Amino acid sequence: MPEPQRRTHPPPAGRDEPEVRFDQLPLHPSLHAGAREMGYESATPIQSRAIPEAVLGRDLVATAQTGTGKTAAFLLPILERTLDLPPGRIYALVLTPTRELALQAEEFLAKLGRYTRRRGVAVYGGVGYDAQIRAVRGGAEIVVATPGRLLDLMEQGHLDWKDLKILVLDEADRMLDMGFLPDVRRVLKALPRERQTMLFSATMPPAVVELAREFLRSPRMVHVDPTTVAAVGVSHLALPVPAHLKAELLRELLLDATMTSVLVFTRTKHRANRLAQQLTRWSIPAGVIHGNRSQSQRLKALEGFRGGDHRVLVATDIAARGIDVEGVSHVVNFDVPHEAEVYVHRVGRTARAQARGDAYTLVSPDEDADFGRIERLLGFPIPRAKIPGFAYDAAAPPRPPSAPGRPGGHGRHGGRGDHGGRFGRGARRDGDDRRRGRRGYGPRRPDRSQGRP
Image (tube, one colour):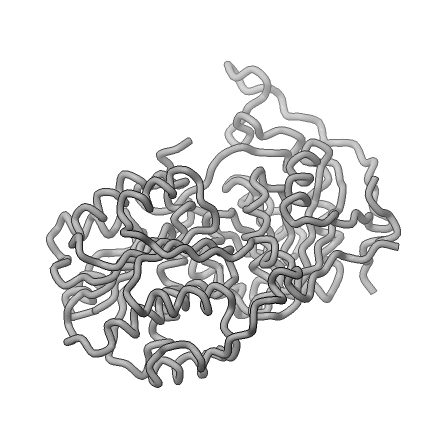
């Protein structure tokens, strides 16, 4: 009888790397104190490899997946290198693709640097300018920003880069995938040439490689194998199901009372909205977060999820990059991602900080090829299972009549590629920020007695 595939230790290559205690890292005692209060004891691979290089002022290219501790891997060197500099000048800029990531970095910065005089400000779209302008003019030394809002403030003359010493490009692959490359180039060309530049990315597509070649000087390379990250502490299980029954199967899964804090991924914004609405109609508290939600709506959904008001949070991939919530019990891939690396990012939302978690993936027949790529990336087959008593042979609901002048029945929520019933596959991209989208988801338990078909 197949059990969920769980890796509790890294593969053999990772076991050869000695554990590094956090207090062994070359950091000021005030930073060690802040890290201890955040619960840091052992450094993750990205932290143990990147921090010693970064504190020496070297340019850095680091590849690591979500959930590996990379935020601290660049914030601590920033704090270390600016610790004794005069206050009130901008010394560091962190460019990040989404508002959630900017807010997360700002929060980490405040905690890690609580025993220093360094101040940070998050600059992002979707809210008014005044508070951010006041924070910048009030002497924040570290700016964490999304590209669109940052360019707005630059054009208005609110930012002075003459003292800038450090630039970090966070989630560089996602930033370029969202169409920010022209904005990133404009920002980089406005900064002092003599600076330290660190680039962090989950993957290294050609555009990111070219960006590194153009703007970094003899960078040190730090790589954390993604297959050692995705598997640690996570149980993986696939649930084959017809596309039109995915919502009903998710409802059946949620009868399990141990699914206390569930993050559900859809591929598109419209599917996220429809799924959250359906769950709410079934009296399952659910929030939703995606690129079309306002900042206040996003924060409300996140706080509701953190506080337990929403048992389920439905999210798209880009919006979810900034979700950092402790205690996520389950990740459910409502849609199989087209890119295997995206799966790694998703499941990284559970089993964080060496905890354990479960990742369920609802796999329709036309998603088998995408799911096979995920298994090849992970390096092991993911067991299949079925829910006892679930009506897998239930007929699909009748398709609505075709809209006038729109052959094939493509309605407002059923654009190209969105087929297979109410929750069939979709192909839209999601995005964030003002300048996004230039290119272009008692109780019964799974029966684990069924293996791979």
